Amino acid sequence: MGMISEFKEFIARGNVVDLAVGVVIGAAFGKIVTALVDGIVMPAIGYITGGVSVSDWKYVLKPSQLDAAGKEVAAEVAIKYGMFLQTAIDFILIAFVIFIVLKAYNKVRKPAEAAPAATPEDVLLLREIRDSLKK
Image (cartoon, rainbow, N blue to C red; front, side, top):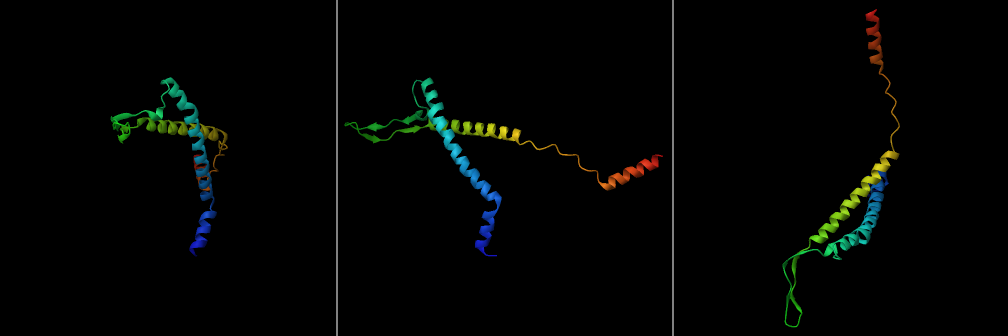
């Protein structure tokens, strides 16, 4: 079997196509949640904190150095923890929304009550023997 035919067989499997669809939908969903965080959640937090954007929060280790003309000679050295917080909030919201969607999906997709499995013939035969011995 040639490599091309093996590749065609691999692609034709349902799992690969399902995975590709899931990745594309997941990327689009991530953009939606990022827009929610950037457009609604973070401005609200910025309003509460006095108009400071969370992504601008930082701890300055070494301030920038300016020359006599006011031109920056050395850049500021800072730990930008605000960007980390914003990304963490993105992740938490994405995970929460996915949890809610999966929870609703699982409620809708409850499997039908499984009928009790038929008793195997050997067990039935053993029961008959037991019952006949009791007589």
